[in-house]
Length: 410
Image (cartoon, rainbow, N blue to C red):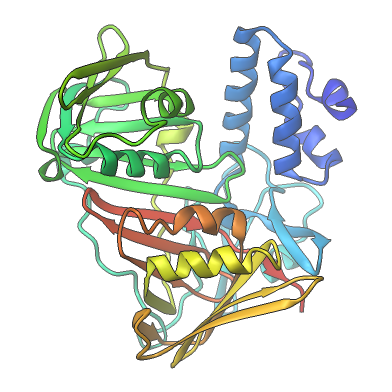
């Protein structure tokens, strides 16, 4: 806690997050653990301010694809922030690769170009470097949220009511929403509900849209936002399985600032909670625009089992896609492991590879993203040293996760 007490304590009206993270080698996971300990030692008002200021600072650091690799651990270099908050990025073309240069002191252009083989348009939207259409797989076209949903007023608190006939299935979806964030913000529009948020370390993202057609009832009086404490509701409402015939309703009252969950079966139970002020940095996350060289459709139950086994060997997994195979590899100090799917295998439903691809990802994210209880299949899309996109086609709509890769030493 010495670093925190010396560097995080308020100085001239601001918290010194950048200085403290530099001293900790940008180990965001460790830093956040210590920061939470420190916050809990303060008054509730100060603790809330510390968390919001830290989230705002990390938002200013940008999407993880703008991060550069420093530090080593078991031959793996982890992308960590080296950009200043609130600074815009410039795009400079070099040969056939467009790289993003963080506006930061003492970072040479050559270092950024070597570490970031991507193209980012303004506002830090990640893209791959340009290649011809015959050499890449464009992202599968998906229907964008309808106009009403996309134009939800981000300054208005929503007032709405919607229900789902299967409370247990919604429980599993809600648990998926909680894997990256402790506070959830929904955009509620006339045509559905959506959320797109990143985890505090800016390494992973969740992207979900529930169309109104996937609800049993759907009524929106006032389109807008609703934010709430995800963990409190998870414990109070979704801690145990429901009866098979249980339905669930969600009532949002933006006037009084309450969200209520209504469970109905042989009886009716209501749980009501105060809403939170929406963090604008959380809701203004741009949609990733990435082109993929490999797309693999797999049985989610089998992949989840493989991840659980391989996690015992290492803390990270390499995913390799070739024209005929999909490989999951774990290499650690105690040993190595590999699970292979061959084209035509019952667990590999589809394999489309335009260019052999390889990338490394942390098990801590992967094990939470593949959820067999939500859907039977999962789509994995990636390219060499680029983010992984996991798409789960649920009964509520497509649930998408993105996670930035680790960069492996040559």
